[in-house]
Amino acid sequence: MVFFLLLLIGLVILLYRNYQGQNVSKYITEQVQAIYNRFAPYSYKIVREKTKQLGQEYTARQYLVQVVIMGGFAGIVTYMYFYNLIVALIYVLIAISFIPYLSFLRCKRVYSEFIFEQVQIYTTNVIMEFATTQSFVKSLEGVRDSGVLEDPVLSDVNRVIEMSYQDGAIDDAINYMNEKYPYYIVKNMHQLFLQITKEGARDTGESLENMQLDIDTLVESVYRDRMDRANFHKKFLQYGVMLFLLVMLIQYMLGSDSYRALLDNIFVQIMLHGIIIFNSYFLLKGERYYNENVGVE
Image (cartoon, rainbow, N blue to C red; front, side):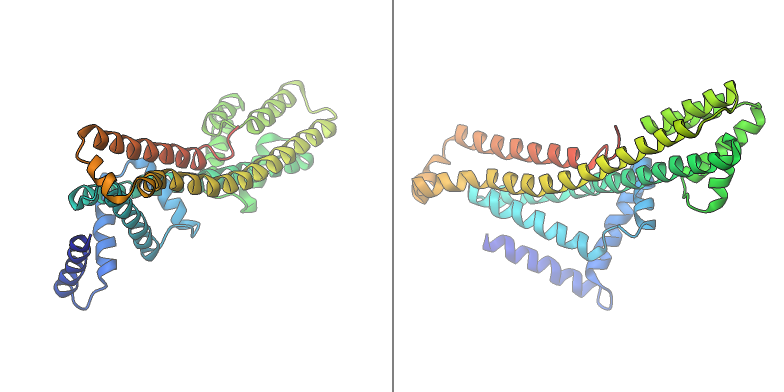
């Protein structure tokens, strides 16, 4: 463990001497970011760019703290499992390599929450505009010109308006919007306007009011679910950390010498690697569940 710490300190000193006058952590972050930009999937670049625009992207310091916490935790735990610096260092590098994936999941959650809020604004305002204009396309134009929408929803609304004027009908435009945003409130609202357009505008006040109440109910349930998921996420991480510490409890009960003697058995080592892999997979699955499909029915 001492050797690992000395190696880490030596690496920091080497970087500092080679890049005097520069911020070492900033240099490391820029190099890693260059690699991300080169190899990251297009979907990651989109959600990360929107996360930046929303001001919710992690700073270089926050990413560095994440590297230190994950790498440090992986190093301490695996060293206490195997008492082997090489094995611990390998697990440290593996743990750090998962940070881009965790960042991608977080950006997807932020992006999903943003899209849901935009869908809420879109549906609510179109209903309000329709009460005045009695025209679906005119309602879309009113919402577009109000400045309440942002890209990509704003661009898609413009596309829907263009398709409606080109086709002289709203069928294809509505199908396009339904495919882009497969929320049932969007589909139900479009179905209602499609029915009104084809059958003629009658007394739609009650239908629109019921639709608005349906949207309000959904939004309330989604935000309640978001708070519940956040509370569950904290408890889940605590539980996941405790899973890693169970072997240390066994080590404490057996005694350090007896435990180290067990490490000479290859099957014991395989079992310990299996425990680490299983616990890590369990945590990653939980992180994916927490960050994906937010606001989607």
